[in-house]
Image (tube, rainbow, N blue to C red; front, side, top):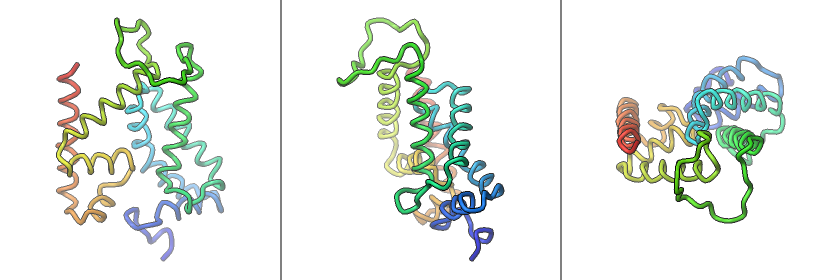
Amino acid sequence: MSIADASPGEPGYWSGQMLAVARRRDQDCFMRIYDHFAPRVRLYLRGLGAPEAIAEELAQEALLRLWQRADSYDANRSTLSTWLFRIARNLHIDRLRRENHWIAVDVEPELEFEEEPENPAFSSAESYAAHADLNERIERLSATQARLIRMSYFEAKSHQQISDELGMPLGTVKSSIRRAFQRLQSAVQGAA
């Protein structure tokens, strides 16, 4: 079966796309990777506290790095999504370090603030708190919904991949993810 005949839900599909990018600089394979992962990387970066415009910029940069360093990807060491999300995370951390309010510390971040910081950008402690808060809210979902959210947004799996992996009908996966996301969204809005 050639790469063109494979589907995104099949094991090794994304590794095969990446191999074509690394070996032949295949632009069609890169665009499939880009179209699938760009929204997921952007959402991941938003979850790390990056504003929408910054998340978009960092997602673009992460995918550019993927193109530039395609030959360094090793499918035996990690999935493509893990590799790409690590690139995006590192870019986010680098950006935070370049900003004026970044302070490197070796201790556990203090999560209690006496007053609101004047700078609206997230500090590392705020990012940590936001991430911990999101994890706590996900834990409050049903076990199935929590698993679906993690697979979709943190593991960057397509709805079809989740359906295949869990043996759930595709429509059930989609509606369950939508309901879980709505519950998370209403919980966040209710806390604001």
